[in-house]
Length: 277
Image (cartoon, rainbow, N blue to C red; front, side, top):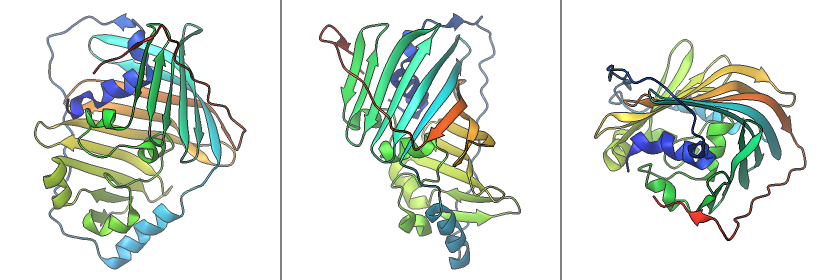
């Protein structure tokens, strides 16, 4: 499976797949907007620019735990689904997700350092795999640290998330932003072009774009309305949009608490059947 299915995986993992949702009337308009990533042939950044960007990476907020209450909306030409839920994260250890609709539990999921587990209560199904299951949907490494960074609006480098490899990327600066894009070697290796934009005003990522070069399909992640939630700031909305495929998933963060003692309950009843990909 290709990058076009990454949103499906995210939805399946959050287990909105178990909601019937509201079907939309089909139209004959099959046109989809395709994002264009800037040319990466401009060469490597100079040392001064690399130091500026590395400083932003190294000075990101740190935390022990965070709990987020959110609303969730999924839209495609065929269907719309809404729900709400809770996300709990212990830094670099576990992500726990609980999703409900109409006041009833739909499903819950955990991501640990080595295992992805999802339990779909409404369909009595489950997933329990190592992170290789994500490679079926994404053509490079995808792990706990990157998922955590995506949900918490943290700066990460794809695919290895190692700031020491920043020199391998195309890094440019304009009046408002730093723009970091895949180096040519990574594009050739993974057939994946990616670009992230960091706002100079906030020193926060405002957008990630991933495009699979072989079919020009991909994913855009946008962060909107940076909000002070006490100890730290997070975007009010995290929006996932398909590129070349008309799908949109929006998390709206309503309440965020840092440093709280958390639990991460999940279990798989014997009667549940495994979801096969």
